[in-house]
Amino acid sequence: MSSSTPAPQRVCFQLQVHPDRLEEYTRRHAAVWPEMLQAIADAGRRNYSLFLRPDGLLIGYYETDDDEAAQRALAADPRTAAWEAEMAPFFVALDGARPDQGAPQLTEVFNLEDQLAALDDEPGPTPPA
Image 1: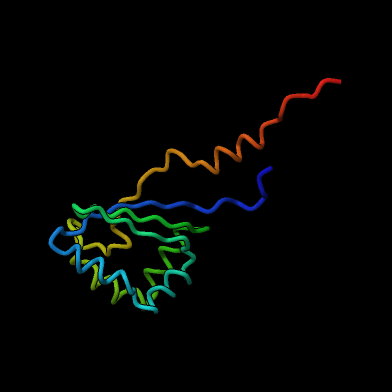
Image 2: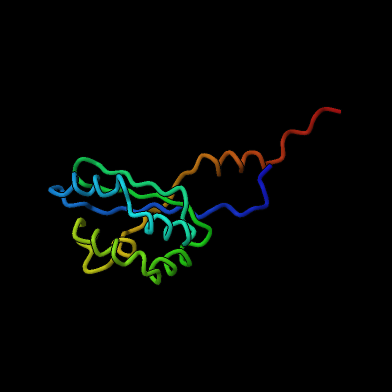
C-alpha cells in the first residue's frame, strides 16, 4: 500500500566539465564550503549526488518537494553566488548562466520504487470462497 505523502520530485541534470579541469573540479567537491552545503539543504534539496565520467560528463541527481521553490531559494541566497561564480568556469557552454540554473534536466523514464508501489496498489486476485 502506498503512503499518502506525495513522492518527492526527482531531478537529474547534466553538465560538461572541461576535461582539463577534472582533477580540480573533483578536488573542490571533496570539501564543498559548509555554507554552500547548508544553502542547498535549506532550499529543500536532499539526496544530492554528482557523478563524473572521465570525459567530463557530469550527471547530478537530487530530490526535493518543490524544485521551482528550491531554485528560487538558491538564486536568492547570497551564500550560493560566490560558489556558483567559482564553479562556472569549470563548465562548457553555459552561455553565462549559473551552473545551478543552466543545467539541462533529464526526463525520468523509469523508477523501480514507483512501479513496485503501483503493483502494490493494484487489486489482487479474489480468493476462492
